[in-house]
Image 1 (cartoon, rainbow, N blue to C red):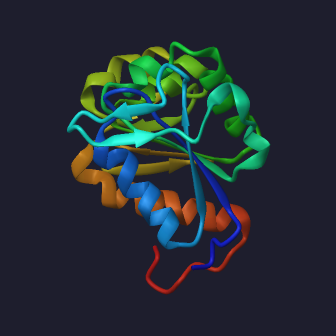
Image 2 (image 1 turned 120 degrees about the horizontal axis):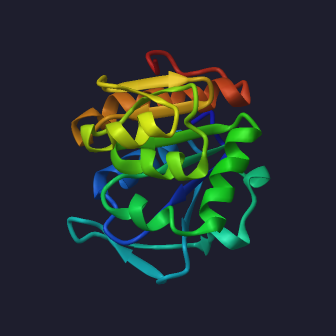
Length: 184
């Protein structure tokens, strides 16, 4: 538990992919990090695609990237809703411009595209967002997980372990904490 004292932001909206949110949240909690669930304000509790409810701790318009080390953006259908909120897009931009870890998985590349942070970067994500990534100036790649600078992207649910491992490793490196043996 060497991420004690590190704060992680996790975005949520209706129909998030349950595992793409909950798996990395739990992994960061296992490492001792504090995770804040951040919604858009459209609801207090959001249901995942598979029915799991998640209650937001706060909303994107009330938080600042300066208060967190990294952000998790899950896939599912939530990214199509998340990208409609300027407060969410600015929050993601602020992480990226500060060089903080930005984790996008599956359809979450839509949020990155709408935030304007994909240009010149290699991005993994579901094949369904390939054209969106490429049209936003990124290069879509068909691999489980990839890190391009501070941006850590993953392809689909089956790749969550590889993506989360890369995401956790990126945060350890960012905060300068030694990684546990076998962490990467």
